[in-house]
Length: 57
Image 1 (spheres, rainbow, N blue to C red):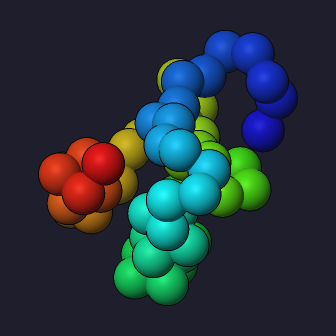
Image 2 (image 1 turned 135 degrees about the horizontal axis):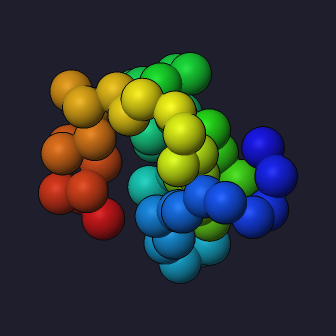
């Protein structure tokens, strides 16, 4: 995904949220290392796991 035209949920890179999300949600999201979940403005968002991810953040 390009670095422009999107948005992201960023967390502290030493916090295990992204690693946990990869384990639980697998490929439901696009990840950037251990610090962000990336979203494309033109893509449909998977709404089921998103509230769970936000609540954990």
